[in-house]
Image (tube, rainbow, N blue to C red):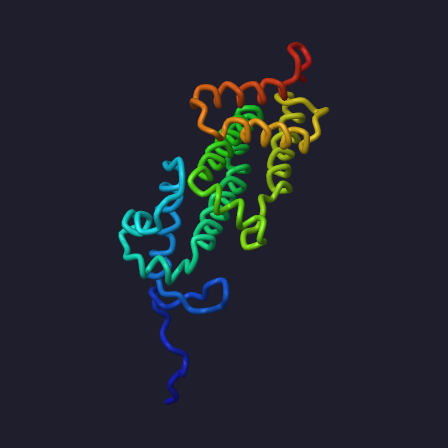
Length: 207
């Protein structure tokens, strides 16, 4: 009787990383924990964050951090990309749960939180964008998200149908740039409410 040469499947078998190299489950978990810890640390900080502090927060040694992210720029890029992916992925989820105007307000609030997480890594991001080591923000992804809310809102009658999504993205980014220096959360909420209110149709024009 012949025996198969195919090895048995194991739950902890290595899975390839972005470069095609095998990465075991514990290594993947360490990487995810480091990104989560860095995200929290950057969001809470007013200035640069020590990598040693991030490693401690993730429950690993500094050597483990450097194995996954040999430079600060690589860690910052991973945090930035992870958070932007989460923001973009939340668009259809919010539209499934809420009317478009409510969903849009929740989403721009989430995007504002994303912007706030960059406070502790502003210098690294700025240098990384300038050198090309970190991909710059994808304006297209932000505009596409806003367009989805506006399209649904126009069909529902909860948002205006005569608004350019890119204009809204410009307004949102401008507001967030103005408040990133550390204004109170209440002011941020008021400004985001103003953006949302400006996108609702005038009273008496809803379909």
